[in-house]
Image (cartoon, rainbow, N blue to C red):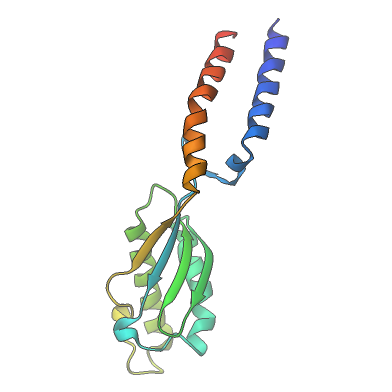
Length: 165
């Protein structure tokens, strides 16, 4: 009897996974499934056009390294002549402001150490302007509404299976 219940639970779980293939794209923490993507834009102080030529080569790798130190990931990024665009995947345990502030601060320090001796206008920790733009990037509203509508039925089905144990 226990074997048949176990088989039923396995088949039920497989059917649930087949019905919800989008769940595979989510990341997980101990008790959290998450997908937090943010479009972030920030500029150098006074919109100096210093991000091109030799700096652009190094900033991409530097931003990826800094993001990984905060358990984040740069999904997409583009360094324009006078601003930076990034699509960041940030775990819910970190505030967006904390991660962006960390990346801007550490990159400014790195730029001052590496390139500060070559050019006089590098001012270290003041390389980036204060503030940034951020916008959330999420699932389609219709998908979320359908998921919420169907979640109650799915919970009832799983509760019934739990009663069989």
